[in-house]
Amino acid sequence: MGSIGAAVLPALVMALLGGVAGWALTWLHRRLPRDESGLVARIDALLPQTQCAQCGFAGCRPYAEAIAAGQAAINRCPPGGEATVAALSQLLDLPARPVDVGFGVTKPPQVAYVDESRCIGCALCIPACPVDAIVGARRYTHTVIAAYCTGCELCLPPCPVDCIELRCAQPKPGGMPS
Image: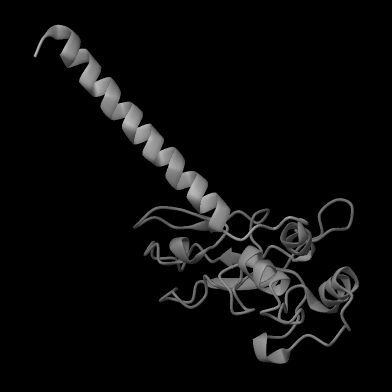
């Protein structure tokens, strides 16, 4: 094969691969459900973004998708409390109901705190945090970035020495809890 053939073959292969990838993306785009009205985004914006999974979904966005699809009730979010249920009720024109205690109880905003004198640096809490609020490295003490912590409690069960506790969140300037 000449030098021209050696240069053309890779270009043809790349063009073919690009065409197949474009076709696959077009095919997927036509078959995946679309949120034409932005309903999922509006529902998600009303949720507290704790990513705690108390509602039975992996986070706030999957819960919003389930609500929009009519697959989940609007009262499964204990961190959001009655205010979130009322907002979802108004948005979706559904009757407001009390928060379902089967998914947990509504608590004041909280933040995790690591007692660094008891932390053994096992790092088991780090992957448990859905918002990456815990920093540290294996065999070193860990700490929580309070501004990022949502108080979801997911870091508590993996801690083998119970050095993590939840405390009431301190209000940020302007009156909003951290």
